[in-house]
Amino acid sequence: MNGANQTVMTEFVLLGLHEHHNLEMVLFVLCLGIYSVNVLGNALLIELNMLDPCLHTPMYFFLSNLALMDISGTSSFVPLMLVNFLETQSTISFPGCALQMYLTLALGSTECVLLAMMACDRYVAICQPLRYSELMNRQTCTWMAALSWGAGFANSLLHSILTWSLPFCGHNVINHFFCEILAVLKLACGDISLNALILTVSSAVVTLPPLLLIFLSYVFILTALLRVPSAAGRHKAFSTCSAHLTVLVIYYGTISFMYFKPKAKDLYLDKLLAFFYGVVTPSLNPII
Image (tube, rainbow, N blue to C red; front, side):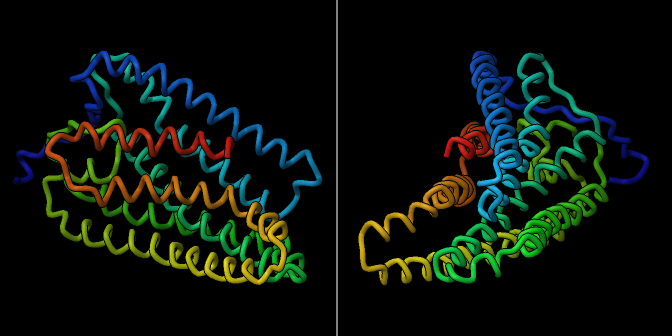
């Protein structure tokens, strides 16, 4: 399309589930309740970790980071989504969409890396217990958390720059609840092959090394647990990993089902899966 036919994009329309208005009312009530549990539960977890000296340990330091991540991630799109459930037509400004896409992608990437850091913490705690305080000191934990946040936000910045440098020529209906990067890229009227390639490569870089690190950590953990002579000792040691393992199963299980299931012609199921991943999963973390 030539420059004369291009229009300046000022806002996007979020399609959501407007074709199923009755379901939107149900999701509004459900989402409001879950979001309230998420914010209150994670905020309480952070406050308890700050006030109780017994919880000033690396494990709870990383859990506080995860809780902050969950609050920030859901707050980047859920409040607007709740408002849109009640509107006949949901719109979001161009800058608002850019910010929403940047934050959701950044916080999702950050969580992936942070879960790997938490696996390393559990490895040191079980396999190197006598050196745990020395290896997992405050400075090391701070650097590990900073690496997680930095990697996630740098990855999102790269994709945001590449995405918003594309031309958008008038079609502004996003077939999703929020400004998800794949849904936004479908609206571009330029060549998105480079974006797709970099998105695939960066997704592999952000997810596969952390997943490998998690796998290796638990291989060493299980090997160490098998050498523990008593069943009570094995159970006590493994119980410190149970919360992290549960979060891992929910996080990677939902992502795997979302991206590796057969593509459906109707995006209805994809939207509900994204809803579960973005809204329900973060609210489970403080309960776990």
